Structures are given as structure tokens and as C-alpha cells.
Image (cartoon, rainbow, N blue to C red; front, top):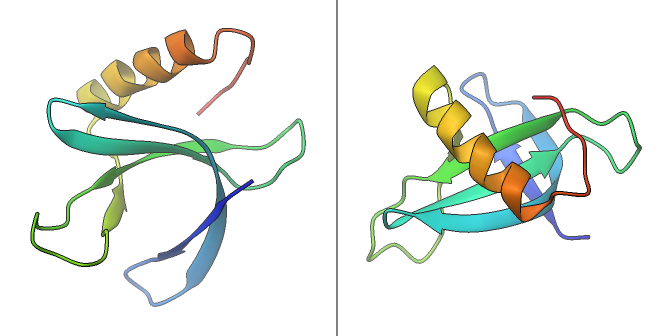
Amino acid sequence: MEKIKFQSDDETVEEFYIEEQTRIGGTAYLLVSDSQEEEATVYIMKDISEETSQEACYVMVEDEEELNAVFKVFEQMMEDVDFEY
């Protein structure tokens, strides 16, 4: 499973496992987990990088409305998986 490194505002670096990815309205989203265990916590990240950028820049989705909408898309994509975010 592919990993992504995420650097928070306080400069700490965490690694997440990419569970699924999708594009909604021209924005790329990732569904990531903090481990490969069954009890893993999942997060939704979105790409905020410029189109001309060589590297992707992802941030955690914090807006409740956006989070719920994107989460529903991932739930439909992965019907056989039961998660909590």
C-alpha cells in the first residue's frame, strides 16, 4: 500500500497509508489511514497545489460540509469497508 508523508504546521511529519483517491469538481482527494490495522483512523486530504506545481500539496479537510460530502463519495467507492473518521 502506498504511503504519503504529511508535515503539519508544527513541523512534525506523519506517514499515512493511501486507501483510496478520487477527483471531485477538479479537486483531488485522498482517503488515508494512520495504520494498516483494522482499527485504523481515516482522514480525508485534498490537493491544494497549483496546477503548474511539480509536487502535490495536501491538507486535511476540516470544513464539516466538505468533509461529509467527500466522505460519502468514498463510502460509495468502498462499500465493503466500514470506517469512522
